[in-house]
Amino acid sequence: MDKQQEVILVSALNKAGEAFIRQLMIHGLHFAAMANNKREKGRLEELGVRKIIMVDSTEENRWILPEYPIGKVFLFEKSLNLSCRYIRLCRKWTSKPIYLITRSGNSRLIYKALGASYVIHTNSDDVSFLIQSLVG
Image (tube, rainbow, N blue to C red; front, side, top):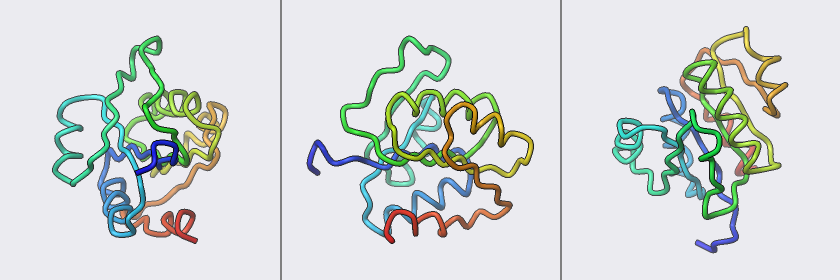
């Protein structure tokens, strides 16, 4: 892969996020996934993810720019606090759209204020519709 080619960044902390990663692989799209602990990293490796960015979401002064440019970002909500930290982190890394996928209806304004471009509410684990924004 060309070092200057942007990668799609994904935080896949739930079944919908894992399904999205599988769709990215099926379509042969260049992506990286974020993990903030060894268990998450191991799960991503089990899914077949090759590029994993380890982040310490609690230490903002340790947020370093990844070695490749970040394009669109897809964050699958696990908790409000972690999602907020990830939005702030990713907004430092890219000016491209950040998609926050949530089952909750309470956090839209918070996510938008922190820099999410789109807050998508879904109760389904099938988020293949998101791939259309990447392959269209």
